[in-house]
Amino acid sequence: MRPPHAPSTWLSRAVTTAGAAVALSLVAGIIPTSAAAQQPERPAADSARPHPAVVKHTVKKGDTLWDIAKFYLKDPFRWPEVFHANTDIVKNPHWIYPGQILTIDGAAVKDEVAARVDSTGFVVSRIQTRAQEPTVFSDGAPMRSASSLGSIEKAPALTIRPGEYEAAPYVVPSDRPLGAGKLLGGVDTPALGLTSSAGFRIYDRLYVTPPAGMTFQVGDRVVVARTHDDLADVGTIVEPTGILRIDSVAAHGPAIAELIAQFGTVVPEQLIVPAGHSFQATTQRPVGGKYATAGKVLWIKGTPELPSIQTYVLLAAGERAGVRPGDEFTLYDDAASKRIQGVAPVATATVKVVRVTPLASSGIIVDQTQPQVHAGMAARLTARMP
Image 1 (tube, rainbow, N blue to C red):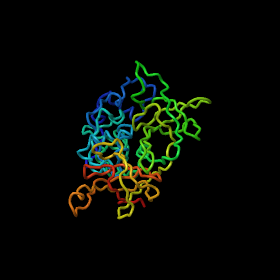
Image 2 (image 1 turned 135 degrees about the horizontal axis):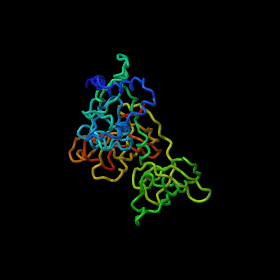
Image 3 (image 1 turned 30 degrees about the horizontal axis):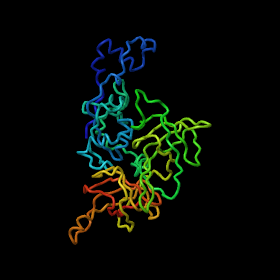
Image 4 (image 1 turned 45 degrees about the horizontal axis):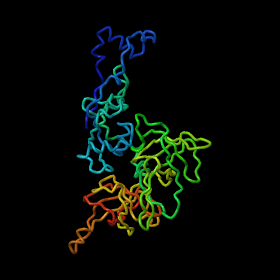
């Protein structure tokens, strides 16, 4: 544990000079405001201090990469930047442990955070203690490095984060009209002959029409999505590509929306569907055991050659099978058992369910012990939410 920083002693060394006497009087508050205003103005330390090359964070109980990215980078959706910078330490982004020291690109952190980084790379925080009373040399809140704050309790991390649910592909019945609205195009004309065929970007303004039976209100949030070919005997895949906030509604004609979150390429003609309502925040954890529920991998987002952690998959087990968000499935590879008699299928990966429809479950790979994950693999429920 790093020892607390000693209170600053610059005033004690300077009290013998006239200038320091003025400074000490200012701290004590005994010079009138008019006199204080005559002192030369100094630039704020926060704005003048350069960003460090690297910022360090010691993981505490309850930390998540989502929270760390929100504190240091201001945007929690940038948590993959923290993960990819620390893959030598963090093997699974859903599991980080107290005591691990993560590094963050200093150039990317917020200015107010960079201004509080000490010489060791840690952010200095003020912790109030009862043992020390305020003095003119100390305000009673000694400085401590973030590396020594492991005893501070934080709220338990959510089992499923809102962004994981919102970005999850899901399955709807193929024999029912989707009733979706449409993204018509951008409000602003692209400059320099550019087109929107490459996709819109975050905060772009877009013309949209509402889904069937929905009347837009300013402030409503809807999902922009694309569909994939139907899964045989299952349904149609709906893949969210972003979230829109309705900013303007006209009596006649399309509404104007702003792209406030993006999960993939957003282009004209994509669908507008209502936001889902089955997400419920919880900190409960699934309980491991032997359960009868089983299925198989139906589809893998992006069809990668070697799917890895954080890849979305669809499983052929949904609400009808009693599956709930937060449940965990283990995937099994039976390639070896087909080649060699008597060999049992090998546990390959763990999938956390983040969204469920009557037809299928949407999950994220959160752990992986073998490289091969492919459609058709057997999946068995191995941890159930209480």
